[in-house]
Image (cartoon, rainbow, N blue to C red; front, side, top):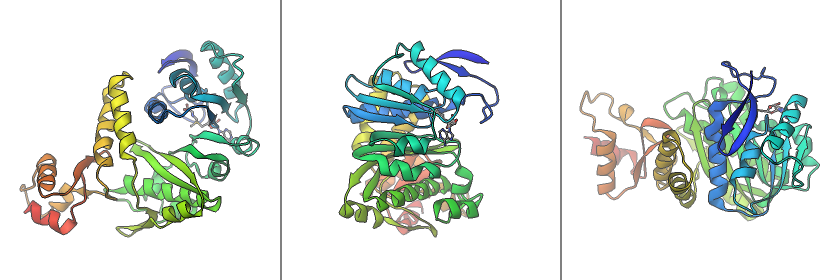
Length: 349
Ligand SMILES: C[S@@+](CC[C@H](N)C(=O)[O-])C[C@H]1O[C@@H](n2cnc3c(N)ncnc32)[C@H](O)[C@@H]1O
């Protein structure tokens, strides 16, 4: 059924169906609105000006249209909105008109293979990769065309391989061994990040994560692109194993100042919903704890019967002992901390 809906400040015609699948004439998933909200919020928080933006797998164009409508004046110099489907490209044009953006000279609607759009361009300052499944087929062209100082945004919905349900697929696609365990979402996200960084490295581009998260059936990572061998070497030095899983990115998943700014913006300026605020609050806290991986208090407390302190009690005790600690958005029972595990176990006694 085709219906006009409002998402953020965009009014878009979409094909709505109780069953969200690739088979929709033009793909639109209302459950991914939060993914788009966060993209808008991140770019607002960064406050970059005169960006050349590419929404290369645009579907109905809702993401690009929201960026055009919701970022401040002067933020976007040009916008390429592309989808390989003819129906999608037609709908993008219609949706631009619906938003008073028809005939806007800075917008180009394209109906090409996404890699061609990137390779035929002179480069972009923001590239959004939002595929069905794995982003791998688009990484090479995106890494070539992302500018120094630009932001590369990557979604992956193939969480089953990345989280260890299909380890062989993960090895082929992401060149790493995953693990199905309590920490699988963080581990899978870190495997994805390293894969993106390795492609960047071959073009002498350092891709440093500034904001990442896992939610429901997808991972999302935003990278700041730097240039030069020294910056790339620094990134590669932070690749390694975590609990026998990987290789993966061991560095930070967030830039703490950005996480703070996004949280503040969501509360004050954007009328963000509870779900988004909860996610941003948790991430703001965990961004301040420089530790890869987290502890599951139930696993740590196994064999101790009912004598397990609550997450809040433990976080407060860790902080009192002079270490950093927070919950984690990856898992309700998780604690991210700089306290070594032996000390944590002793503290739990
Ligand atoms: C997950 S949907 C995009 C959803 C959209 N970004 C949004 O936020 O609503 C993926 C889109 O990529 C398009 N697509 C898939 N492979 C493509 C390719 N190689 N080149 C261009 N478009 C492609 C599909 O037609 C589909 O619309």
